[in-house]
Image: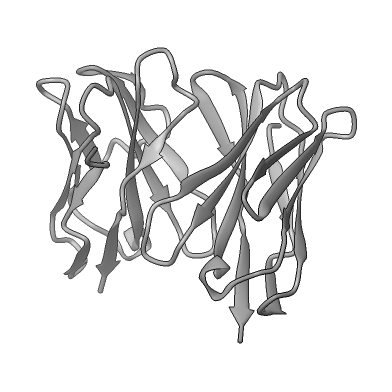
Length: 111
Length: 114
């Protein structure tokens, strides 16, 4: 069964600290993996996308890694800001027509 | 460029009442998706349109849910009658031709059924 699992479910950190979110998937075949940020009351917005051959991708303070052998990905946030408070959703695509969503990690950044 | 537009943003209804959500995708995007997102969960696909054709509605509860995209642009998702368990955020997304994996999401409609 195609599944995407994320951990932790929720996370609280202080402003300026770093954090890492985890994503494990059992999706096959594999086309690409995305990390989305979803602010409260908004739709998800794509942060990064990685294909099978890519093992790291950065977008500002966000850095995603991908290990296609172990089917794991991580999203590292550097020097967190209050505006980073959101849900982060790992999404794996088995083909061009479908997306498998994880349940997300809810991050709260406190001053 | 305008993003995906959805209305209303919030809706509160009593159970057994009908409700409809509207979506206007990004101009030029031929693929349109409706998702349901429960609290603390990721979005779940309800239906996908390629132009005006529904190409994947396998997860749409057809006894009470219906959708249409008559001219291949705007779309409407309807629930009739609504049940308490339908309370969720309904997200619309669109993607450009030949890039179905690149979906742009609207802000969603938050539905509360009392």
